[in-house]
Length: 289
Length: 172
Image (cartoon, rainbow over all chains, first blue to last red; front, side, top):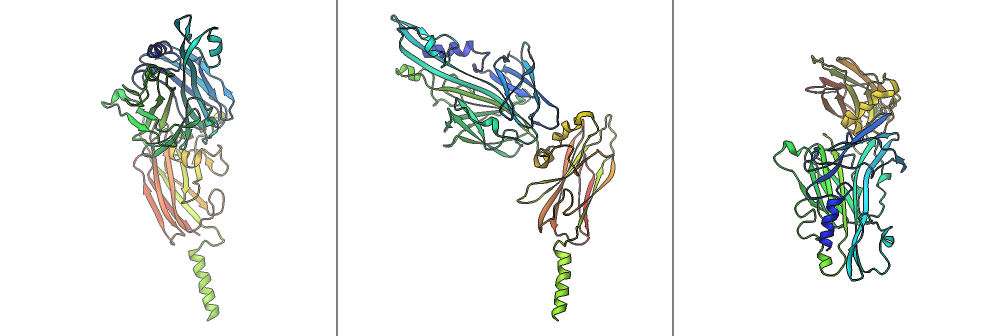
């Protein structure tokens, strides 16, 4: 049952932050390292097979927000959604690092009512779960999924404030700042799952421009006990990074967690709740030395 | 005897260790003449790297004449400079930034302990020159030198595309 739910959810929530099948969702900023006094960045946002080509679906702009270096909200400007992609601009009026994110979380699950198994309505969140359950519901099984897709752009010197963890889902904590990446150098990132170091998390990194290469160039990495992963960039360019636990994977046939990772429905079949599901996606720009 | 020793000691100091008087670094940068359809003078940055100290911006040539300092938008394209020393500055930067310069040999002088160049402790340093040209390429040359320099020492390097000969000499 949970298995079918997961499939349904993945299919119907394609336009939200949920990854589906082999399609990869991404936001691509026009630049990540910027100078000047009146600075704008423009972003393409789409869901596609190839990185970073517009060949499948646009990402919806409604869930996207930008956070300024001082923690305030920055406006999403000139948003437009076309057949294959959305675009929008952000006016970078402060010096420092901005985060542009599309994050969501929802609750899937089922309950028994009058001897019938019912599914939780689509779009249920932990805040609306109580209201979604009718009186007399029994045998409630739920599974929360948290998905986060975020990019970073910096005007002037990089700053750290936008990396303050929320404690929800998978989050990136810089050891190396994501806007300070250079080909040939090693970068270290730490990943948290619900605020704690995500040990053994599968992290997939794929360089853009695959259309002009024979090889995908995918790097499959795993975080250490502190949730840290070291990535040495083979060349300059834009890279797509994905990390996920549980659920329907995005990183490959069996997902970043591999064939031994938690599979949807496994716990449900054993009578327990479905495993924690969370995914993280970012686009990183690596500059030429 | 005692007096003679003192004199020779102070002479040695005057040559080897940095004296109170400033020493001057003279830098010549050749900007190649190019026959290209669209030519823009390059943005050029000069900075000093030293072990266990933050890199120091010494000179940046950029288009500061545009309204609202729009030329600063392209400073991040001088990539190595931007990462090492540029991104923490505000432009225009007093005593550091100036207008772009024409092809030919351009000269700069920096006195120790004045303006952007600090008094230098003995050790190994690298002076870097990076040029980035609108609708063109980018190139960095490195000039390693030991401080204090030997009298008459000249350090030279040459770029192959965006920079010609770059030479560094020293005088009192």
